[in-house]
Image 1 (cartoon, helix red, strand yellow):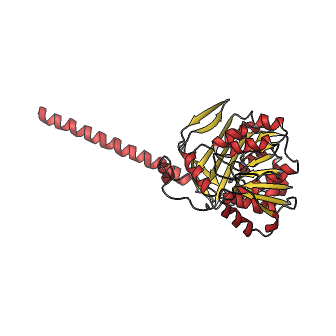
Image 2 (tube, rainbow over the protein chains, first blue to last red; image 1 turned 90 degrees about the vertical axis):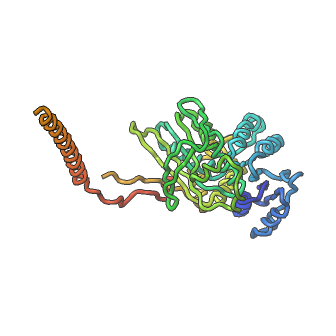
Image 3 (tube, chains in turn brown, red; image 1 turned 30 degrees about the horizontal axis):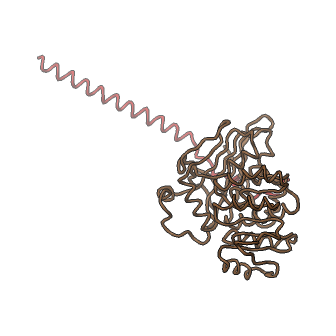
Length: 332
Length: 59
């Protein structure tokens, strides 16, 4: 298998390392707007001979069976369209709502050309979709899925986080899409330790779109983003300072409500990790599974609509990205 | 005589209000004491919380 990775920032560099740790991958072509950064990643890996330097503006993806797009938000849909047209399957790590809408719109084209577009292959969306799908498989009927996330990967992810807080937030509610202002709808969410309880707000997150594709019958789908008062206050302003090269620990929380054996049930799954590490692992594993033909079928979908969740989560755990379950506290 | 009667009526009204206030405070204190004493405070949770998803749960 030959993979190509476009963009080697905090997430892209992790995708390259994870791909090289997979025995199925013979070579990885790496391309970035900044050739020096691509060269630095090549030097940093254990087996530089398996990493090929790609020409960013040219034929970087020609030899690839699968391409992972890990560059800034805003470009993914256009690049994916060109790649799908040449019959190449694509994995996108973008968490931008606009990118995800554009990538999902490539579904009919991808189906016609028998290729896959895996959309939102990161921590959230991505691992959050897998956890939701796995939790949903244990219910007779699923009524609601609510996702919350905190933290950002690299600088591009931090900028997207900032933008999401002041943009309209989509949610699926009783058969129709609703849009609410970002930064509203405060809700206290408990993430896995040591992150703990944080206030989360509506934001322009693509999880509901991806989950609706996978679970069209679920009545309520929403996603919230953890933020501080300062985040909310400055969300409408340009970023006041340069984002950090890499964010600190991040977390996701997925709450699934429904019924099982005639009784109402709630299952809460979560995960903590550095978002760039988790996203890199999810992105690389998606590429490997696509090349192995383990996707459900051609088309454009999120992780929940692309792969069987349980074995994917097992493989993620083997690579160090582990899910957690909230067992609740006893009521005495 | 009329003036003395008016004074007495005002005094009764003040005492009546005072009694009502004392009664209200007393009832509030009693209810609060009952609620406070009935609730044992309980034992902090000894189990529950987050735990890692394990193999059998991922089948």
